Length: 573
Ligand SMILES: [Zn+2]
Image 1 (cartoon, rainbow, N blue to C red):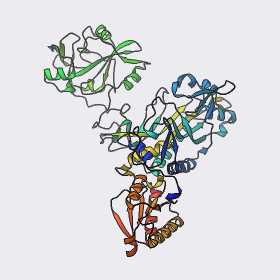
Image 2 (cartoon, rainbow, N blue to C red):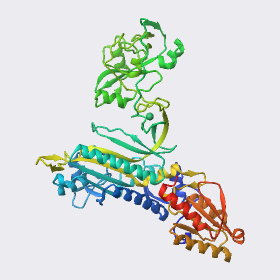
Image 3 (cartoon, helix red, strand yellow):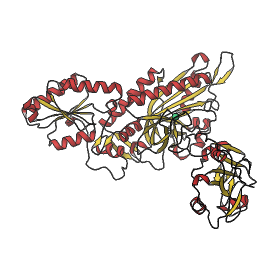
């Protein structure tokens, strides 16, 4: 493509609202323009990136045995009423009425439509399993759209839904999709981790998020440095501690006048935070309970809530704490407490510890769990932390990352098929709900995440596999007949070799052309200049490296083709 014949309106400045690199660089590089908050138009090179990502996804989904369909963006409200999500989804669901007054939504996701399709046409176990996917625009009416493609309101998603006769077969397909996603993100040239995700209210189910590792990511992750275990900080399992032999000293009261916080008590008694135990009073569905973690740990409310099987878990207000402990806030402890006590595993492993004495200005020391009080349950109730030993393998430790979620695989079970009566007749003649899985990829988000992971101060550094073009060909002196002849010849030869080339033949200064080439971020750049042509060479530079190579004019197409072809297949890293 000749640069003068396409629309790549690069900008010196990004709009003030753009804060993260992917948003800034896609606008400045002429990839993207805003239409409304969280709603964008893709310009030619932006759409080429999306098409390349989509092609990789299609190839891998088809290879995995899934089949592409295309479902409507406009969905009748009655399907959402039937699944129960009409009431649950809230303000994110964009609803409207047609001219006859019927309710409709713009699909934020398509479980209802696909279940309606399959229940109408699939009756027998002989027609299963089935995995149907589409690549399509979704709309979610986020309150605060921001960060460009990272959190837009309209975005392109690949969503797949699988249907099975048995649990076992649905789990096989889950693994098939997990492996397929690993290939897709690898081929896109992304550094990523598959992370165990919160399975929410659907008990017994299974989910992984695929997270692209970037400094600007919204999600905090912990990943083992020795094995593949990785999880969101809220979900990461803590390795059970090694128990110390319990202290034989009896517990005793010590005066701690006015000392309430971890810092105050540890400083006053000369302790380390790990020897002081925090006793937090919560209301679980309205009833008080105590939760104990070491002074240097954070209580994990998600884990505690799950153990309690509570619908609601909130920290108790001061009055409720005083009612439960008989002491002012800051002096709670487990000894003598008459409410259920949930201890993190580390508490039960301590030789002894210091805690509040349920009396003003007093703490106990030499307290031993199970000797001086009876825990209702000991479990994993704390946040795992960087440096913790891995719970999965013997030798690894947690390192901390930030990530951008680009995909999720989900074992759904019968969450949608049961209420929507998506049933089949099994081999024994019995009618049963189909077992489902669903599998999403944020197509437009991949483009943004790739830039977050691959950029420098001058612009984007695309992996070859998803770059809008593979090579930038820059003519440095357009008016010079010899330079133009060589550049035109290389352009024709590169195209003939099947290389996607963006040919900058604009009548601009070399500095302007180099700046635009770096900003747009194509993986390789060939510069044709007067001095080089006189010597029979052109300059070849990889966007990722500062090194500039002088290559003979007659060799450069072969040299760059070899590099591009190798990186196309290998994901480009
Ligand atoms: Zn490990």
